[in-house]
Image 1: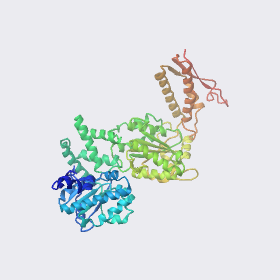
Image 2: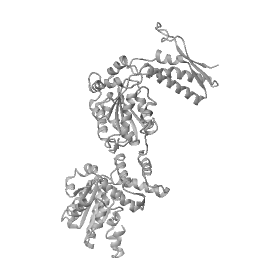
Image 3: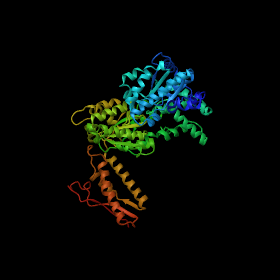
Length: 597
């Protein structure tokens, strides 16, 4: 308000308090822009031309929030010295008005003051109303009060510049055609990379940190990362905010403004870990640590990750999308967990899992969209696992197609959620007849994939043929980066897996209870040969592992709870094993835990 009152100091005090009370109370002078106005020459010309129209000299600026609407008007105000530019505060007006009718009266008083001021001072006024939709939304009477002013703005010596977003325009303003016709529409597209970099360079000079930048490489990284990881915000605001945060860290800690600081700021503001690095030379070995005898599967995943590590993947889509195909219990989920651990350091928080059997009906579409966008908004750096994708509703599948195509999705609040930093894994059991054939006739203890490669065409055909109970959406295949086939597990591989699980149990008991456990060799034979399943449809090693938990782990736990003082335990099998006596139709064999003497 200072400029208004300074302009009025030529009058006596009584007139100061009464002549332009509404104008002084509800508006304030539009100051100089805080940053250099870059790349807006055409829009400035549009706006200045609108101010010089003979009759309808009003404008409506349309742009996403943060695109620079206010800065544009401030820049024009610096050039157009013939007029006085004031910014009207809709929030203050709404708070003071209290009701729809009172808002109309308040607006009339404001415009009357403005018209009198223009006549008395012989200087035209430009009233800038940001968030213009707030007034339109609140009061239809206020809109009716504005229309006559806009229709005769040139004759009254008043110009109005309104500003809002496209969304608010279409929701509140567009339906009122007479109002729209009184405002010249000017669209402001968010600036491109070159323009944004110029703005950042100017801001760095303004902040006094230009000496921290040897070239524009870091500015381009800021633009690139904010474009990728902050899609709900607009340029240049999001880049400026990141740079501003980096400056704050630099001033407080004297840290260099470099890529490491940029990574820390993005982690702080967007929970995005761009500094995380995977050792490209050891990807395959790390994947193999958790998944047994799936050499082909880990090789396919490792090749895909090489692109991501080198930052050569498609920047407009998720980091990677893979279809894990194979029988139940062959390691699809285990490999997904290992993928999350390799990429993000843990397989719990950064693994977002959806059981698609829960989204089999069309009426779950809204729930799925809401839950998916919410969880990715909270944690945009993650592995997304969509288990048994063929069970999902077609409507849910179409939503995933959009994610795979564009890497973006709108949430319940109409915010744009980015999937560009996610790794998407879909699993399916479709193609079981292929895996059954391999398991029965051509087992492979290494999972080298030699036979799987021979069956690749048949597998793709089986997946994409929606016949019988197969509901796998074939249109997904064209959007997926890699199909990852999993070899059926041989008995030897199942023994490896169960043996590793037993080893983990022994270690866990030692760490938690300071007790040593000796496991008899027949326990492994009992779990795999007697209780396991060789049928590829039966769950791979899952049946044997479930029996381990159900019989071995629970028996060990029961013994520890009943005998806490015992620190030497033995796990063995009592009774005859069917695998030792083929003539036995049934067996009384069972797990027994005792103190080791």
